[in-house]
Amino acid sequence: MFARVATFQGGDSQRIRDMNEQRPELPEGVRRVLLLDDEQGDKRMFVVFFDSREAVDAAEQRFESMGDEIPEDVRGRRLSVDVYEVVADEEV
Image 1: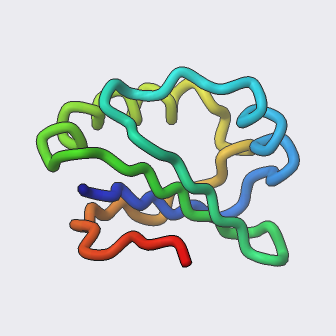
Image 2 (image 1 turned 90 degrees about the vertical axis):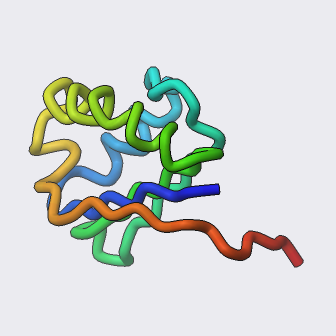
Image 3 (image 1 turned 120 degrees about the vertical axis):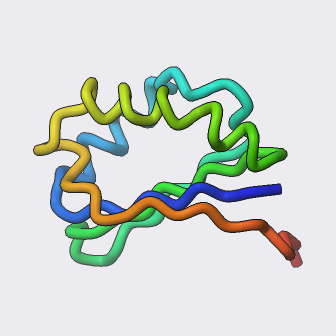
């Protein structure tokens, strides 16, 4: 499994929560989405899980178009995008 982690600064945490309730159209191949928000609401991380690195790469164009669809005052300014292999994922 692979995780694409996009970090953003700024934006509007409440509007993002509201948008998330509407279930936005995600790229094909997404298995799970995790949204992390800091206590001040100024920085957030979107972690999206895929079965393979190829699925991550295939979804990149859709992620870019989502950036065009969601205004920066809502999503914030993207600081970074990284891809990691998930080596452990356990619930205890």
